[in-house]
Image 1 (cartoon, rainbow, N blue to C red):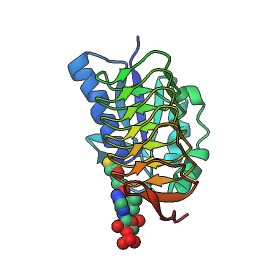
Image 2: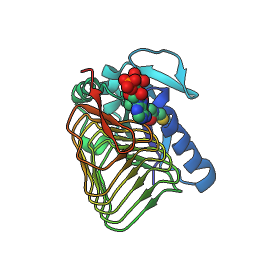
Image 3: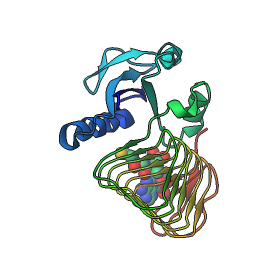
Length: 221
Ligand SMILES: CC(C)(COP(=O)(O)OP(=O)(O)OC[C@H]1O[C@@H](n2cnc3c(N)ncnc32)[C@H](O)[C@@H]1OP(=O)(O)O)[C@@H](O)C(=O)NCCC(=O)NCCS
């Protein structure tokens, strides 16, 4: 299989772990499906995580012409995800040109649906029949239990757990170490604070935190 060139739209925060994943897969698992080409970033110049910044996000059109280039949208702004979504909506990149980046140490059980643009990092466990929608990022050690539905453009941070049959909406942030107990729904743009235990439904655009998780405030945008 020809190596695909990966362009990461974003910065160090979410893009750096994607670089680490691709490099680790290459160096330790001889998985050469992707090589990092570089970043598109509106605010920085030079390099990120040792790879060149190829241009601004709007420069994607130039790279789209090259069929061997694939993209990852690695911008997730906790509590400001309407901004990230708007940026994403400005990109006219066909869905099939978004890569699925999965660390070789992650376990993906039977029946799991992984849409394009999804990133699943090291030591994550995705249980049977879970559905990860377009552009969802599952950071290291994330656990998605069976039949859970996540995303699109949602962020499951390090060590977070989403219980079975839970439904997590679009552009949601489930922060590090948070647990969403099974069957609960977290609606669009909500933020679950680090370490929270969610045992009720969470309305859209709300920040919930604590054990059990309670309303903290509405998001800023
Ligand atoms: C939820 C979060 C976004 C809130 O950030 P913030 O708006 O700057 O919050 P503040 O620090 O101003 O706190 C606001 C209130 O929420 C409470 N709070 C903040 N984080 C909390 C948490 N994790 N659990 C419980 N309560 C929390 C604060 O105690 C404060 O309460 P008060 O108003 O009664 O004093 C932030 O705490 C968080 O969890 N970020 C996610 C970090 C993360 O996972 N990053 C990924 C890195 S890989």
